[in-house]
Length: 71
Image 1 (cartoon, rainbow, N blue to C red):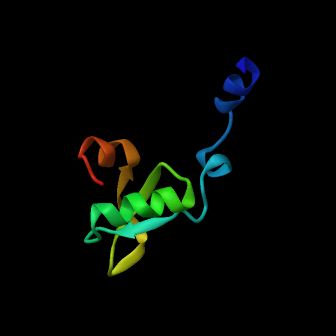
Image 2: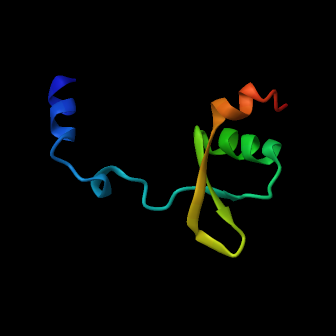
């Protein structure tokens, strides 16, 4: 584990990033976001605007949705 941690200091974000993240439109319902996360088995979604799906305007984390009591 320490070896892996030390290696992170010399690696660029580009090497470990997700190149094609799953995203959702900012006007989508929270329940749709939670469903998408469950379906894809992920914990975060990039949030975009309909006009530009390739520009992230925020990040939505599953814990935020669960704390909001989304069913």
